[in-house]
Image 1: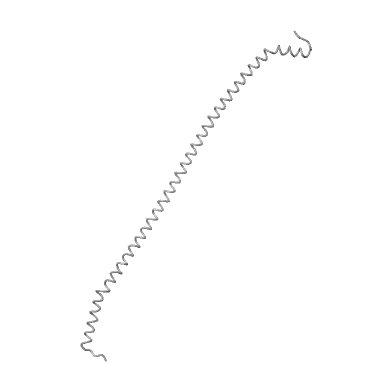
Image 2: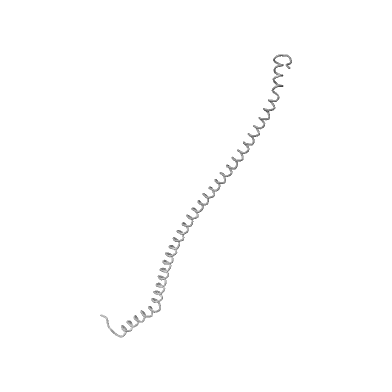
Amino acid sequence: MVNVDFSLFVQIANFVLLIFILNVVLYRPIRSILMERKRKILELEDSIKQLGHDRAQKEQTFQTKIAEARIKGVQKKEGLKKAGQEEEKKLINEINRRAQADLEAVRSQVAEETKIARRELESRTKIFSAAIAEKILGRAVS
């Protein structure tokens, strides 16, 4: 059997004192370090979630702005294309107008030259007819 004497009480007191000292010196600092570590991990996880959310919002904003820029670019391109087509039509119309004016000038010049040639030929018809008659008849016609 176990003898209960003074040394048992000393051992119990020694054990309680050792538990108290270990708690103060070892367990509390370790627990506080573990709690601080857990707190930091939770803060970092929250920070990661917030950064992920911010990144998603920025990505959405970026995609929206890219889409708007594309739409504006297409609209500007279409506007420039339309302006170019209108300018092309103006140039073609101007060229056609000039060509018509030149054609009319050439036609009037040809008509004028034709009139002059006709008058000249009409004035010489007597001379030509006399020359033809001389050749056909073989003698001079008066």
